[in-house]
Structure formats: structure tokens, C-alpha cells
Length: 493
Ligand code: BES
Ligand code: MN
Ligand code: MN
Image 1 (cartoon, protein in one colour):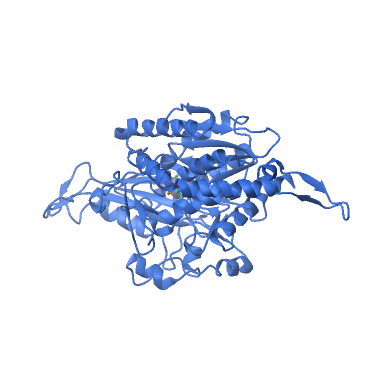
Image 2: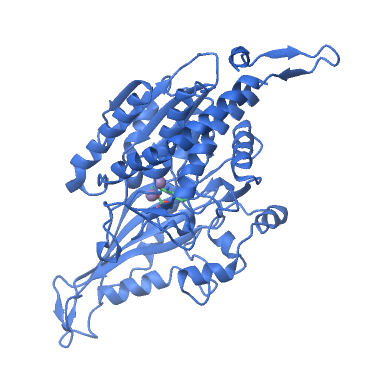
């Protein structure tokens, strides 16, 4: 074995047909050690993740600022401990970005791993079966081996941490086949504004051949998939103001515009009877998929009955002419995320509120531009405001949609890696979620991202009782070293 270990991956010209082949003996041998290391350290890996999940790194709520920063510090320490060099907590105008790297040979390929250590707020906390920041492992129907229940378990601490542990395993087994850089941010859930600035100012430091992200999912635990597209986002807050004060609904009801009635009416008018969005120009830049592409998508084993059952609904609902899979990925949407105003306390209070509010998200698809869509929304929403009201539209963060090609070396390496660990070739699936920095990475760094996620849609990310399967956590740690290995080999050939 020692002798074998010394045979470094090397090209040998084939004298018969001049094809160049590789000897993979060393990498195969070391991969066994890598995988054995992962198996031996399973429990410790889990416990370390549970510790990370105990810190409430909620980026949206300033009350948790110290915890967000503490998470960055713990992560930086963890990266250093497992052998990353130049680990730095890079300050930004907001929360820091944790950077670390291992450059083994500058002539080898480099994988840039991106993830986020911030999490969504836990509310509504009453709906959690166990406290959001006191992780526990419980078995579920979908996760018979057990799942970790905690805010951030899947999105994205659990998935980001798989990379740290996969890196540890490669370091400890002397099998890291290329260079790796980590860039883990703390503001993904609030729009990644400062990451954009960091990336712009660090082109050299972030030089790489591919970006690898685990912040998406797979179709099912027995149907591995690779995410090939993400939707973009335009997010606005609207405010309708009527009279200058709350009014008695008997004395004034029927005589003035009720901001809540008006807001409800305006929102309802944003979809027509086919559930198409009525904002003029909204669909102008939407790329329609070809019949072949749609037929390809329809091959995914989507089971409507299971979908309905899991959500406890008796029918799906959406844009006519499209399947549920299509509605949730290749079609744009408009959804109210929150709506408030007036009296919502105990009992009945007869009042016409002075103001009504709503938060509205629009998920976008190629080639819709978030700024353009926000403008279209603004123009339209203002135009439908009736007399007797004042309307305000405030844009929040947005993000561009992204598609990743399936004919790239990165995709091929990811596909081979999943096939190796799941025993099945993964299918390409476009996702409905958004990771705005993926489009930004391409613009700024000229790099494509490989979305190697391991979560499930049913993991309740952003919801009460978020969880992440132990199967998925370990499968991720096992799959990542194969990606590194295949990617390095494919790029060298
Ligand atoms: N990890 C998610 C996005 C995601 C989840 C994509 C599952 C595909 C599958 C990410 O953390 C997220 O929540 N993104 C936000 C957008 C952001 C600007 C707040 C989203 O999609 O709502
Ligand atoms: Mn995420
Ligand atoms: Mn998220």
C-alpha cells in the first residue's frame, strides 16, 4: 500500500493509440481512507453541528447581532482547526464573511465553496414542537434514520458544515486533490448586500475554477438531483393610507376609502382568472421553455398525491397551462408574504384603520430583471390606487435568476459524485428558491456555480420545525470529496 501511495496521479502516454490515460491508484486509495474517516467521526461531526445550531445567528434581527458574530468566530476557529490557512473574519458594513483557504499547488484547480452561517428568524415560535435553537434528533416518516430539528439545520448551517467536515476528512486522509477556498457569509437571509462589495473588492483572492454551493436540495432521498436553476426575486412593501386617523366604522363606514378594503382589492387584481399576473409588461422577458425541455422536466417523478398529502390540501393552485413543477420553477410568481392593519386584538372593535400594509415577493425567471420588474410593479400599483387613498411602494432587496449549464465539467463532476454515493445518476431540476449571489458570482468572477444541495423541500426551511435528515447530512459529507476528486481529474484531462 505504501508503494501504491507513492504513485502520484500521473499521465502515461499510451504508445498504441496516443490516448492519455490516468493512474488513479493514489486517489482511489486515499478516497477509501477519506470515507473511512467520515464513518469513524460521524458522531463527533453531528455534535459539532448541534453546537453550531445552538447559536441563534438570526441576521434579520439586530437583537441577535452578538450571536451572529459569535457564529462567525466559531466557524473561523473550526476552519483553522481542520487545517485551513489564512482564515480571516472579514469585516463588512454588516456581518463578517468568514474566509479560509488551502492552496496545495497553485497550478492545480481551485474550488470556491460558498455558504451562509446566518439563519431566518424562528417565528412563529409557538408552532415549534421543540425550541428552535435547542437542536434535537427525531425520526420522521421521511427521515427514518432521524433528522436534526433546529433553525438553520438545513438552511444553511447543516449544509455549509458538510463542506467543513468533508474538507477535514480530505485533509486528514491526505486526499485533497486541488485547492479550496471557503467564503461563508452571514447576510444571505437578508439579501447579501455586503457580500457583493466583498466580491468586487477581492477578485484575486477569490480566483477559482468553479463555485460549489450546498444550499439547495435534492428531489428525494432516493431520487438524487442537481439544481440547475434558481429564481430571481423582487421584494416590495406597500402602504395604503386613507383618512388621517382611525375612524368609527359606523360613523364613517361607506363614506371614505377603507385602506384595508382597498389594499385587498388592489392585491386581488394583481392576478387574473387564469392566475396570470396582470402587471403590464411583467411577462415580456420571460424565457419560455421548448416542448422538449418541458418534456424533460416532466420526467421527474413528481407525485401529486404525496404532495397534496404532505401539505394537507385537496388541490394545487396556480397559473393555468403549467404543471406544479413548472409553476414552482420556470414560471414567475407574485405572492403576498405578510399583510396587516387595523384591529387584530381580542373581540370586535368597530374601526376603519387609517393605514394598511403588505409585503409582496415576486419570484423571477430568466430573463426578467429585478429592477425592471420592481419598476413595473411600482408604476402599476400606483396607477390602480383609487382616489381618496395615498399609496407608497418601498422596494427591498432583490436578486437575479440563474441557470447553470449541464454540459460543464463542474456539473459532470457533481453528477458522477452523486451517482457514486447514491448509486443513481442525479436528474437536473430547476428550483423555485433564490440565491441572488449566484448570478452575481457569474458577473463579477466569471464563474459558474454548482448547486450541490442535499436538503428536501419537506425540510421546512424558513418554517417552524425546520429539520435536516441525518442521511442527507452524512450523504453530503461523503459526496463532496468525490466532487473534488472528479472535478480535479476532469479538469486535468
Ligand atoms: N437556501 C435558500 C434558497 C433555496 C432553498 C434555493 C432551497 C433552492 C432550494 C436561501 O437561503 C434563501 O432562503 N433565499 C431566499 C432569498 C434571499 C434573498 C432572502 C429565498 O429564496 O427566499
Ligand atoms: Mn440558504
Ligand atoms: Mn434561506
